[in-house]
Image 1 (cartoon, rainbow, N blue to C red):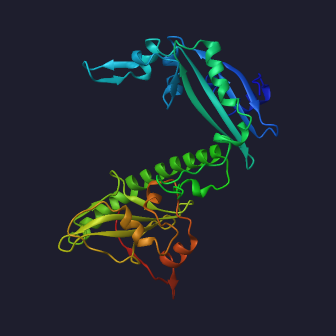
Image 2: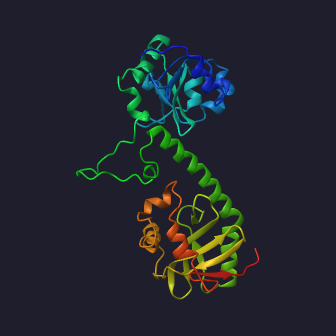
Image 3: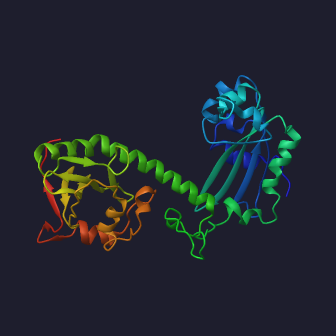
Length: 336
């Protein structure tokens, strides 16, 4: 397959990327059915490019054709660290770059990934473009790599495939599509979790400590300073789980429920507390509380982009009502 300057592919990219990202566009190709595309740029770096394109360069990148020794910054005779991207550009270690675009038209939408690659002095323009051509030289290009379905790896030393909890949500999709969907969900979930923690969860738990000082001496988040939330994709409500210390009984998991529509907090009472004398890292304990009543059966769900979409879990074990009253939720009256 040969690269060509295809204005139709360029038009697809122009409405989705900045003009600066498409500078140096020189070639592209498409699958026979026009649902998959690949396109490439090649740009010689100038001294002014670092400032002008800093937003574009401030992302993950790879490099080739460089003198590895020149990229080292020695701290003493034996130890060194890698020079920064800025240093590599200013010192001419990187003298050109390419943005590689890969796209798939799927479910009525273009999913396009862009990868940044820098070239060193060992590759001139002809050599750099020849290097890029390796990416599209495979006769099965459109069915492998990012264009193919996710490949599975086995657990080392076994024939058992390794589980990929995030990919399980998007079966049968081209790898590129599933990766972009996961990235989108991660971004939304991170923003939502941070907002909820800052605006609601932290003030709520502080009030719980004030109101119930014996029962809640302290709360320990699972990761960093943000408390763990479990919620469906529509984010209409959330479960909040954390490790709490009782002044006399010790540490145990506690669960709270927040309903966005009413702004109300509840205790979720279905899980039974298990006390410990010592504080501990508790991802597996969280899953232990819900594994028999939901489809979350692995602690890696907690560190993934997954949202809890098990409708039976929410309807039967969280929001179930009898005679107009919640079975597993006790409202908490607090002034936030």
